[in-house]
Image 1 (cartoon, one colour):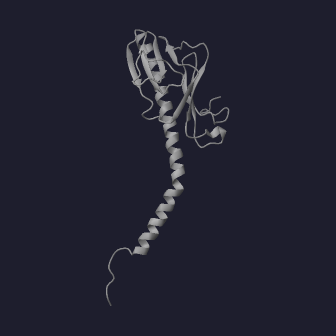
Image 2: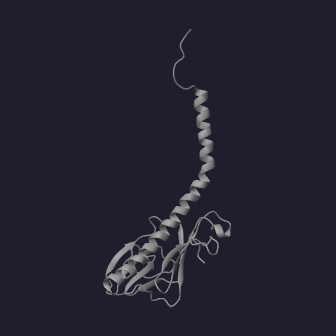
Image 3: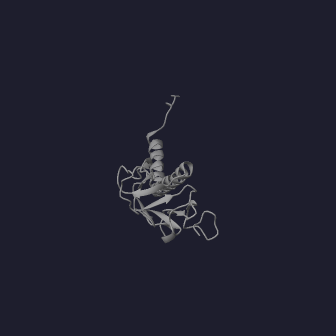
Length: 180
């Protein structure tokens, strides 16, 4: 009796490749949605961290530090503030740049809509805003879950007292991660 060679037959290989291709096709939309959600979160965390840095610098140096949203790349203290800016810069009142970030790197395709283009923090960490404000982050390629889409949009809330927090507008009232 002849001995069979070890390995896979062509039919077995084609079956495995077909199953693998079907799984990839079925998983691609979920993966694309996950990637968009990650870009929104990355951009939100970057902006939130920039505001916290400005607040921290102001408190440490007992001076005013300003957080500026801008579309200028690279952002500097002389950049034109823009409420739709994806880039940001933190400057002290002496126009010394502390740190800057370019949002296009990790936030490509993310829309930013803010109630303010720049905000100052004093030595106590309080803002120069007269009202509580927010920054909304959405995807340019998909609708938010709140409007029937697949993207988890996020907001950053900023109180006049200096409280900075990220929230999910889709969460119910009373939920600690919600915006209300």
